[in-house]
Image 1: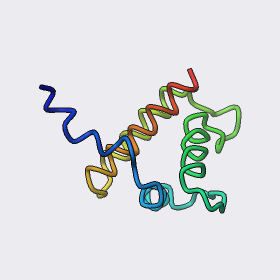
Image 2: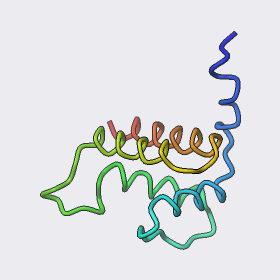
Image 3: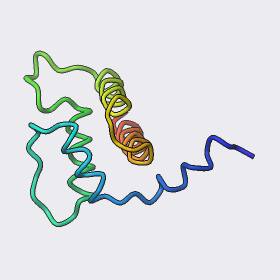
Image 4: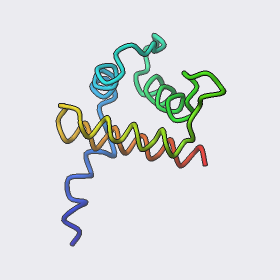
Length: 99
């Protein structure tokens, strides 16, 4: 019925280890906590990115600007489409929680 959503079911249960590795490739200079739970590390990193906590307070951008830049960076990357969709979905979820 909704052909666009057919491939999205895989996004609902992403493999967080793989996504964390893909995230590290995109933001290779970003320091991420070392923890055994890849899901928590990834969600915290995305939240920090969207809140622009890695920048000086005077030059921080809005959540919407950071979301746009993150999605743009993800879509222009060379990772597979499933990983792209999963990372974008995670960014959407985290951004909605920050509104």
